[in-house]
Amino acid sequence: MINLNNEKINNLYIVVSGSGLEEVDGLYVPSKISSVKSESGTESSPGHWNGKFAWDRADGKSARSPAISYSNSYKSWRICRLDGHLAYEITCDDELPPTGREWNVYKMGIAPAPKIELHSSDPRRGL
Image (cartoon, rainbow, N blue to C red):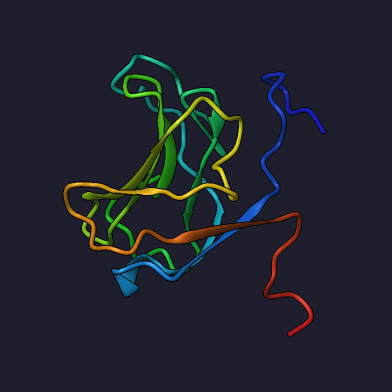
């Protein structure tokens, strides 16, 4: 699917589990952030940040939106804590947050780093 801005529509869901910070674990949904410029000057759109997909916590409790996003400046995927401080990161240029590699504990994170699972539909459906 393509939206009017010629971007792929983010319809993926992420489950984060096993982190040293229980507040980071949980379900993440495609970000609803409106048009904002990132620190690198890239214009965001719903479901996207810095030209890649982005996600918010399903419960809406994070102070940062998106809560899982890609940084053009640092060339890394990042996950934040509820207060918005970064907790985990992985340096790479992958199109999606890596699921088969170990993430790094960032300044405000606590070991162990979480595991990331991508889902093509909302895993809450059918419960």
